[in-house]
Image (cartoon, rainbow, N blue to C red; front, side):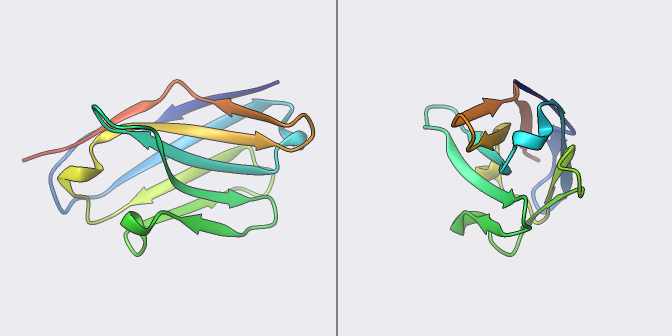
Length: 117
């Protein structure tokens, strides 16, 4: 089992920046990939970015060049640096960990990001 706890959400003005953090605990050695998803009101949950244990990164087209995902070496923590935020980035952001051993997806409870003036 893997437990995920997000932090860092809040209210930010358009054009501003915010950094989200996710702390993982439990069977961390089983994690192959960690990432961030988001769900805006009335929309389906979508991938924002992920990073593999080997360091490969993948981003949604809508955030490329604005968001950066990073992790520590032990995969205990993953971060999402969000710059040049837009109103359409408003959503609940969920931390995700994927284990190919089971396979299994693990989810945090989410943190709300609101981009508004």
